Length: 124
Length: 77
Image 1 (cartoon, helix red, strand yellow):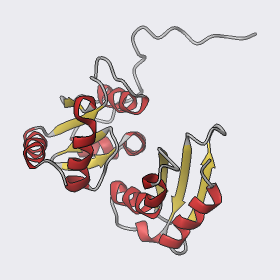
Image 2 (image 1 turned 180 degrees about the vertical axis):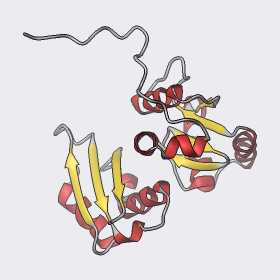
Image 3 (image 1 turned 90 degrees about the horizontal axis):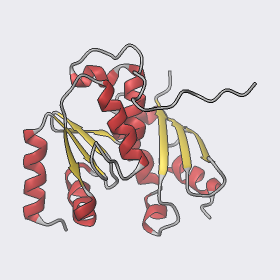
Image 4 (image 1 turned 120 degrees about the vertical axis):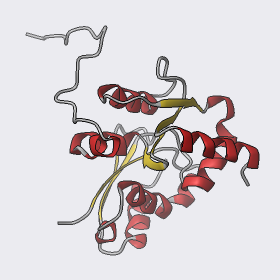
């Protein structure tokens, strides 16, 4: 059974942030590859989002999201109060254009190159 | 090591008439991927489609046999 106070706090956060990401680490320093993938997708979209680092309270937050959204793994992206999904769903929805539609933004034309990424190696 | 054939049959049992493939992406047992095409997905959001697949293999998450499962879902037609 989830901690009622934490559950209330999470519900307030979800209600108060149209786009909210529960992730391991922070957008600046993701601590898990799946969380990083969702941050990379959101960074391509012209949208502001809130981010909550779940690591300080991982197990209590799992119990809360299991009750709220029947989902226990992170990352979790909520849009307008509804759980959209984790990394797999968010990437599929980016590719199909459904994510831009859900967020109410333009579909990004092509993924912009990530800053600081070295050019691909070439083998002759 | 997770039993891929068992996972496949658990998903098939939960979703009759589904086309199911379960792969171990790098042979480590750590990166599993299930690809599921099921008539039950028709009209459902992606998250609900994924919930159905996860629910089918819930026991294997709970007993620690699998830790992560990438899911790709598709409604037929």
